[in-house]
Length: 204
Ligand code: GRF
Image 1 (cartoon, rainbow, N blue to C red):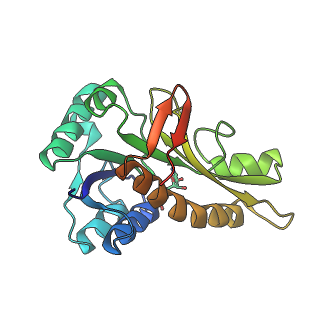
Image 2 (cartoon, rainbow, N blue to C red; image 1 turned 120 degrees about the horizontal axis):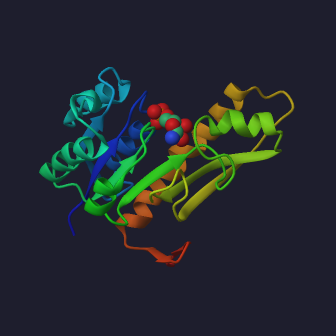
């Protein structure tokens, strides 16, 4: 079987993108980053892609009259690179109907909190402010809601009294870099089965 072709969408620094690129390079996942797309011209994620010899495409949302037109352009680029699985990695836009219809059950996201707690922006800070003793991160399928899709895997980290939102975010990020490639590996080997809201992981 060929390698699963990934399209990664990122708006910022791209450390999760890097963990995916590295896992693919090391042969830990049977996948390759076929294209990286950003809605932010100066996203460091685009630079990481270029350094890795991966096509890096900036698509300016301002150049389109609405979300559907913008997403159609994104879908065209993804299809043009033969993408089979879309990975959102710090992508700061809501995904709409056009992308969901183009890649049904084939869009993943990583969120820096234990969903369904603390969805939306700054999950790490929300958790810290709330005062939880444990937080973590979640990889999930994307649906039309904000961080509401079926959960694939989660990792838990403790929250210490000495933590700041930044130290907590750093502890969570380490786990993000571990579980995102892991989720892609499970998807690429066909081991994820969606049963309603539950994602079941078939034994090897
Ligand atoms: C991560 O914390 C991710 O969970 C969230 O956005 C951040 C992106 O970081 N969705 P990076 O761009 O991958 O470094």
